Amino acid sequence: MNRDWIATARTLSEALPFLQRYEGATVVIKFGGNAMGDDDAMAEFARDIVLMRQVGVNPIVVHGGGPMINEMLARLDIKSEFVNGKRVTDAATVQVVEAVLSGNVNKRIVQAINAQGGRAVGLSGKDSNLMICDQTDPDLGFVGTPAEMDPTILRTLTDAETIPVIAPLGAGRDGETFNVNGDTAAGAIAASLEADRLLLLTDVAGVKDGEGEVLTEITPEQIRELTANGTIVGGMIPKTETALVAIEGGVRAVVILDGRAPNACLLELFTEHGAGSLIRPSR
Image (cartoon, rainbow, N blue to C red; front, side, top):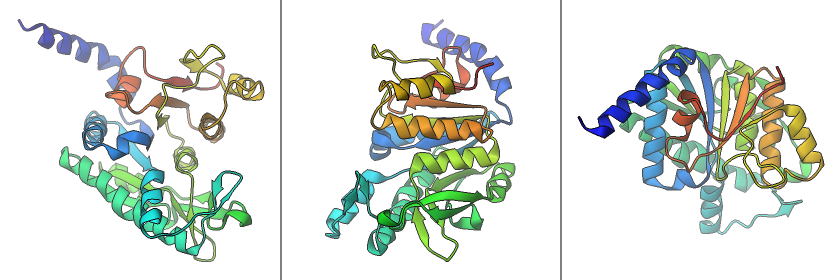
């Protein structure tokens, strides 16, 4: 008998307890990074999401799109100003952000999932008052922080075995459109649903210790300690902050993992060793 077939059968058998554990579970996945720009990686991600839905998981995808926004702004010759490293989102910029995120990027992910046999629907935080935002900082313009969440529309979609794909835009109280950091939006959505898992896909292997080794399991207390002593730095800080806020909001656990790794989401959910760094409260 073909050894590959035997290995496949063994893998499926070993996955059974995990498939049973996550049946009916809500899993929010923040999709971004290099995988979004590569057609093969996009197709593989979409296949994983469809498989999750097929085995009874309720996946909810939240995506970013920074590189695509930068590309469109450059093409339109719209210059960006930055305050402390953060882009100022003026009225002209937020229109481009919405067009790129809700239009191009969102629909590309929806099409990729549908092409793999899934049933996906694209929306943004503005739809059905999913995400009402306050202005984060007047100096940054139309950048928002989620203030009020209403996930009713997401529950309606998942009950209908439909996969929501969400662009990180929020509605202001006076009709404004706010650009929201993708990780922040994913954390707020996961907390509003008290999700079983929030998976933050990145371009690194996970949270690392002082020696550069990936920490496979870590508590919120350890994250605060590693941030305070300068071990967690740069782009990992907003991701770990999102994880802490999500856990405080009722998410059971957050995983920061490498979205470039093949089948990263499936490895995390359905294998013994998982993938990346699992963050959950001390037992």
